[in-house]
Image (cartoon, rainbow, N blue to C red):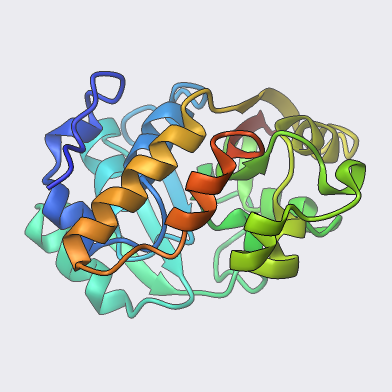
Length: 245
């Protein structure tokens, strides 16, 4: 099995690689979350929404490593699957099925909202930030990790062929870190505290795809794209912000 223990992600290295790959719904979620969390100032006891939580690996990580109270919301995964993961790791967290535009929470309920490799599916609309931040307390934190481009597709004038072959027009939701900074800052709904292209984003994504391929015995769909890219266009953007007040 490809080694998923990395010195730059010491907290993530505590977790069994087989379990992480069994939870696979996207590349290296704990590495992304551990890096993103450095910008979020998570404190024990905080109420945190894990939006697009999948099978619950990121929720387990949030609860165990930061001592926060987690609500794990996902549209596509049965909450009982996530709950089973929570129980296996001795974690108390709330799993629920929820669509990102109809979240069943009270206004100003959360101290922080995190979204790992899901925000690109629903968060690029101009009005979504206003909707989501209504669930944050004043002073609350918002952080996302999302597939990113080193250059905007609008500026390129085309979708690079190796990316288009795998995801087609959906690559239009993959933006630069600077695009995300402007997209959030211009609203004045949040103060952006960090917007950065992860230095190891392409490499980490490739490492995960190789590990996933070995784990399942089937080539991961992104491998061809990542090998062709060689880090020219692809990576991950980590964006964090604070709600004023």
